[in-house]
Amino acid sequence: MGLIDQNQQAYYTGSDFGGYQFISLSSVIDNFTATFVGTGKILRRSNRADISFHAHRALAELSFDTFKSCKSQEITLPASLQMILPQDYVNYTKVSWVDSKGIKHLLYPASKTSNPLNPNQNDDGTFDFDHDNDGNTTDAGETELNYTDSTTWASYQASGSAEDLQGDYLDDLHWRKSGGRFGIDPQYAQSNGSFYIDCNAGKIHFSSNVAGKTIVLDYISDSLGTDAEMQVHKFAEEAIYKWIAYGCLTALSGVPEYVLNRFKKERFSETRKAKIRLSNIKIEEVTQVLRGKSKWIKH
Image (cartoon, rainbow, N blue to C red; front, side, top):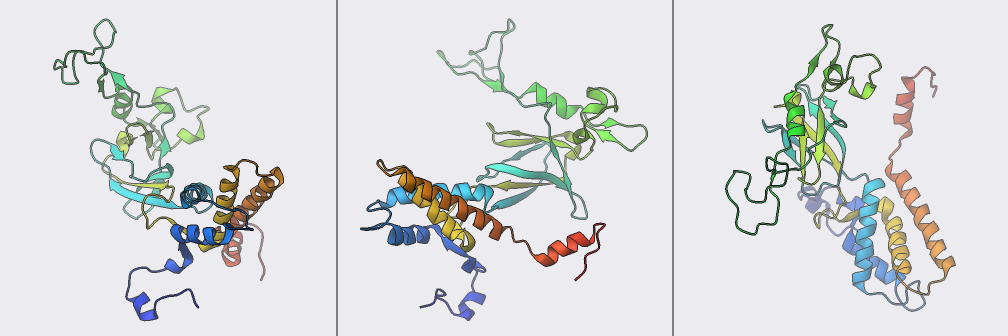
């Protein structure tokens, strides 16, 4: 019996295009239970909750380095110069602004500033528990501090871009704040702008020279945000089985060390194989790149 359970008309008039290249995580758990669990098998018995836990952990770990599950979000930067992190955000891969021709211009993290917490203080420097951010008196016995916006990042945003009189160089940080152009670090020799990610507040703060521009955030997730995301590419199906098996075995007591080492090696081998397959390297594309180099490529 074939794996395709719908006719061509249903597929081309539907909405789940390209879904055949993936297998759902629930199907992975069912297949693993049927294949690896039972009398005379690797796992004599194991409940579905344990298998499901290790399957979710495997999917998350593979999403970071193997699946390359990158997402993008585009916004027009408001006057507040802030962007709220996406709901399923784990880490960013690239932050850029887009010009009128659709070309991305890379933004760089502001490594010499930050957005620290700024607790309310009294004139003598002690922390003020008696007033909120608006100056109103708080309830008696208040034990939590109130915080205001950071003056550190506000000062950085308000400073603007430095100017080079020769017109070939703009820099938000070094030209005016840290000295002259001599010996500058190349990472600061750019005028695209900068950003700072405040993980505690869940926001990205941008420098003032990108206000009103279109910002694109490329980021990675763990593929566990929604049921629709929890699927595995068929190139990595065997790898996730090995991840689940190794996770289940390490949680058991009394498993011989040679068995653990065997599945650890198999997990590594299958992950490496999946990463090579998903790298999607095509000889024609490699040849086209090499044609731009100094060496002549013959067919």
